[in-house]
Length: 80
Image (tube, rainbow, N blue to C red; front, side, top):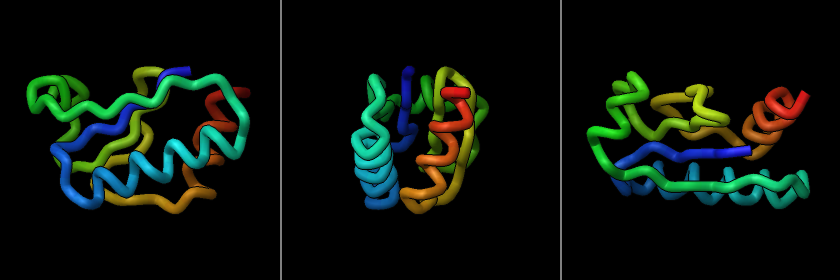
């Protein structure tokens, strides 16, 4: 599974990255978590506000920081 955090490095983007890494660890799944800060790459996903969470190349959230349980649920849905 590939998990990407799209954001330019603001505090919300860093918080989402931290939450995503914790959620992956809590689930014990094999996932690569990547931080994408390149504006052109972020725009290629059609994201207009950051931070954004991308799972397996699908934008799942944009413009807000979810709690860890929400990220866990998104990951579990993608695993099904």
